Image (cartoon, rainbow, N blue to C red; front, side, top):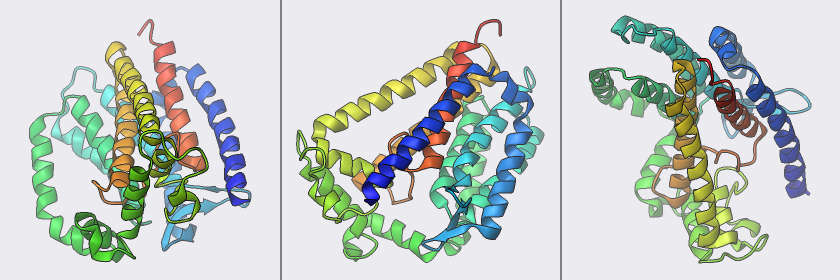
Length: 327
């Protein structure tokens, strides 16, 4: 069945991701600092290839078909942005993060962001932007630059809105009032909140979620997996998953604070921002308090590129901790 195929595929993805986790943990993380341009170049090339010859699903070209399997290069872009941003900032050492440097760094970031936006994949673009800005904030960039960026964004808000796709505008409008289109754009959010609410304290039991298995809740294995989990495991299960993510995020943040290496600290900060942002946005859209953006729940949602990327990034964090001495 399709369900069993997804389980088999996810186990294969997990096995490959676990191997990458171990490999990344064993390699000294400083290696990536010296070869950031390789990750950057490969990702830009893959994103460009996706734009030119990507596999189109639902009107978006986000995947590359490699015959045996498909990959989503925008997931790998998250790794590249974390590595090259942390690497370049860490090379400054005692020099200030001056405007010239920030302009050059932004000039490197914009092609990646642009190639993701034109797929179109607004959700991943938001995550990439949060990672980039978050690392800059963590590195101590003068707050006035963030204020200026916010003002510029406000000035361009009208043309940005005008260039959004119709379905993206609908998601934002329906987010403000899901009842405007109950059978259309608001359907997913309404079914998601029903699923979460019907889970109660202990849930309906594994495999017994009516919203999920009667096909009321769409793509419950990816975007709305949190709602599916809440329906079957209830509030108790939700608390468990919240505790798991809290422990993971606190561990990554503690390593970021403890290591003396600037690159290692920024690397961990980038991973923290990525996981925190994706978790917050995914749960938020499942609860109906954020617009639907198609952001997966890290380590939980079905998808090979997302799972492999998440495990590799955690391997980088482990490498920072293992090789922290002598820095």
